[in-house]
Each structure stands twice: as structure tokens, then as C-alpha cells.
Length: 290
Figure (cartoon, rainbow, N blue to C red):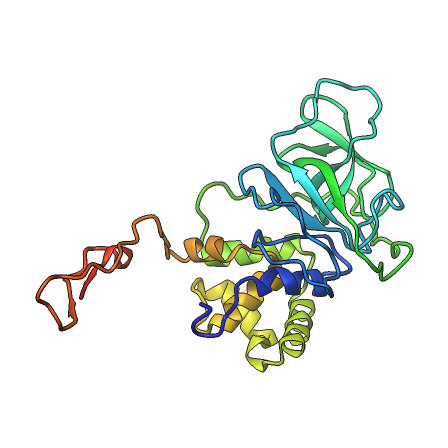
């Protein structure tokens, strides 16, 4: 990707710039901290994909302000889950939660074995108890906050009106196709097609390349035609605005990248010409003999 001018680490860097109003899951890509970074990421262990999840708190979702500031990056431990049998008042722990309105960092109070109440009880959170898995998912326990060096705002914006009664969240288990992944990710990001289009225009301006912009109708087509865009810049833009891991998007399209079987170039004595061996059934196992 880098050889052809596409730096995947830009996905995270751009996400930190463009996602301001709604909380967004950050794509797990390591980037070096620079002097002009808006958020400093220096924790060497933060790339643990199996255990931790990272999200940037949006100004419309900062319901626990001032404890968690808008624009902060929080880390959620996926191995921690609330005890649904403990009906005591919610403690001081914060949880990263997926609810019908998107992603939010809040307190969780169990109501019974299958329902929880998200606190504080104000928009965009619902005042109704929510059903686990069907209406709400606990993504992990928030155990770390990385605050921006220069907060863009001192207090959160007014939340959107709550749904009454609560809506259900999209469920997907196992392997999903491209259309389903894009639709679910757009809903999780709280974006309309027009909002996503405006966001890609900002990306194109930031990167100085109009190829990263995606037309309004094309965004709708991507969710309908169930295949990857033909241009790499468009794929990267989708990952940036919808907070999708590029490898997850490729797997949804049936493209599996396995770098565990890379073979070194082996010199063959007495051979001076380049010969290409017959490839196996998978392109990643093809070997080249010099």
C-alpha cells in the first residue's frame, strides 16, 4: 500500500480529526506520536486487538462530562463485563456501550438478568431499561482516558432527542458481507448519507486529494451492490468515516490476507534469469525463484 502511495496509518490520524460530534470506534492502527498530534498515543500496549477497544468521545455523546472530556480517546477492556445480577446503584465505573443511538461512554445499572439502565438519564440516552444484546451491548470497561492537548470545546453540545420507546440495534454474528458491514457501521457512527458525503469532502481537503471524496449517490450504491469500491482511496475513506478496520472490510468482501507464510527470495546456484514458479491455489503462497 505504501509503495503505491496509500498509507494505512492515515486512517487513524484522519479519524482523530474528523470525528468530533459523535463517538467513533478508532481503527486499530499504530501511528507515531508527533509534536502536532491532537491526541498523544504513547502507550506501547494499546495495540492489543484481542483485549482493548479504543473510541474517541464526541461532543454530542459526552454525557459524563467533565469526568470524560469531549475529544478524549478512551480505552475499553473487552474482558470486563458488568454483573447483571447486582441490582445495586451504579458505581463509579464507566463502560463503553453500543446503544440504538450509537456508541457512548456511561454508567450501567442492572435492572434484571436481561435489562440494564444507562446513566446519566439524559439525551442521547434512553430513559427506558434496555434489553441486553437486542437493544444494548456492553463493549468493555473504560480503564484509560487520553485527553487532547488542546480541547476544542469546554462543554459538550446538547444531546439529540431520545427515542421513545427505544429502538433495537443491528445485530450481526459471524461473517457479514460488504453491504451489511457498511450499513451497520454507518448506523453505529450515527451518519446519514449526506453527513457521510460531507465528511469525505473534509477528508479530501485534509489529504489534498479529491479521490478521497465520495459522491452522495455512490455511498448509497456501495451499500446496495455488495462489493468493494474499485479505488483504494474510496476504500480508505469508508474506513475513516465509518470506523471500519480495513482488514475487516476486505474479509467481508472475501479477500483474506495472510502474511504468515511469506517465503524469502532464494538464490539458485547457476541461475541468472528470473523465473516465476507456478503459484498455488492462493496468491499469498506464490514463490519466486531468482
